[in-house]
Each structure stands twice: as structure tokens, then as C-alpha cells.
Image (tube, rainbow, N blue to C red):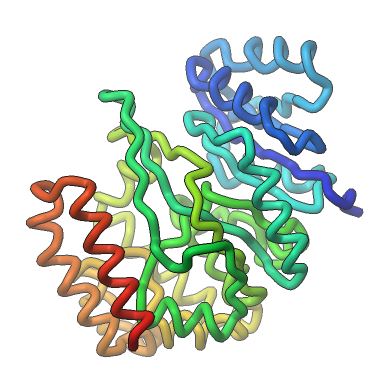
Length: 321
């Protein structure tokens, strides 16, 4: 039974002892104080556990959940999810951090919109090598807004954007209903869970800079997204799940909006080779994939302020459509 107003922060960790103080300090500095912070240590070989134990002694809201064997991020998250008491849950990277008002703002919007399954905000990248933060506004709306299921599908179809899982909260009941982080989806688990929840319950958008995603070339998702041999079997898993009765309610919306885990030419080829995959093929998906292919050559040359301006122009055109 969840506790009303309580927010559970789950931090899966493996050998990130040097990042943990920044992440934990940011969570403990939240203006919304009704928190439980569960750090799931996935059999780290560094000093991670002693770092968390030190925080446990200082603040009873922090709890260490130590795993004796390495099982990966998905198992770590689901282990914590089984004991969470929060009405809301946030999955935080051990190397990421947030603004002090992050939880308070998300809770306020989700309480204002009790049907919403999740909240999300503008993504911000923190580049470790330069110690520089770069915000990439989505320009979806000038103020906080709730998108119901149908509106969200239409918006994603006309003005595709990525809902970054690290930028908001999940309603715990919706997260559990979605299956949590499915172990078989590996690094696509957060992408899948987020879309399932959003397309079932709708989502709150906050046009604010609230969270920081640390950009590292050696991160789990960065390494594996570049691996075509590993990515294709996961896309097959996604298609199988969407064809199952468990996700039959969200499959049509994902197909209609052309929601796939990567916008690459190889993905179109894979989809065309599958009867379930061909259900995703739409003119707007084809246009998006080819557009992003061309953009990939120019993106490294375009400064962030021009990238933000292009995103703004895309959103403005979608509003006029």
C-alpha cells in the first residue's frame, strides 16, 4: 500500500562511489521533504556501500539495498520497486543530479492532474569533460500542461519528441502496472515503460530545467545503442511485447505515432522485415528517420543555440498544423 505524498527515489548503482555524494546531496536538498531514497548497490567493488552507509547514519530517509551478485540496472530497479512505499517514484542515475525544487514541482502537477501516469520536463545535459550544462527545451507549451492519452499520441505524431525518463516522476501504481523495468529489454527498459505509462494515462509536461543528465561516452546506454547486433534482438522483443494481450491497449497508439527506440535507417529495414514491424511504417515515421539521418551529418557542426531554435521552429509548425 503506497503512502500518499511520499516520493521514492531509486538510485541503481555500480561502482559510482565518486558520483554518489552529488546525487544524494541533491536529493536530500529537495524542498519536498517527504522522501525515501533507496540506493540499490549492484555488487560494487569500489567504496559505494560505505558512502551510502555514511549517508544512512546522517539521514533516515536514505536506505542501502545491497545485492551480493551483479544483476544489472533493471533487476536493481525492480528489487527496490518491490519494497517501495511511495505514491510516486523517480529512477535516478547515480551520476545524475537535480534542482532542489524538482520533486515539489512534479508532485504539484501530478496532484493537480490525478489521471496522469507520469511527469516530464525539459532535458538538460551535463557534459562532464567541460563541466557545462546545456538545456534543450521541447517548446511544447509555455506553462505546465497535462496531455491526455489521445492528445499525446497526436502530438507525438505531429511533433515528435523524446520523453526523458530522468526528467520527472512516475505514479507508482502506473509504473507497476506497466511491468516496471522489464529485464529482457535491457537498455530499452526505461524507454518502453515511459511510453506505456504515458499512452495509458497521459502525462504532465513542465517547461522547466529540473534535472541534469550526465553525458559520458562509457555510459550503459551509450555503449549499447551503437551496437546494431545487440539492438535488433531488443527491437524484436519490443514488437513481441506489443503484440501480446498485456500491451494491446498501447500498441495501436505506438504504431500510429511511429514510436520506435531509434530513428535510424537500419530500424526501417528491420521493421519492413517483420509483420509486426510493418504496422509501424507511416509516412511521418519514414520522413522522421530520413530527416534525422541527414541531420546526423550536420548536428556535430550546429551550436546548441541553433539546435534549440530549430526545435522551437518545429514545435511552432506543429501548433499551426
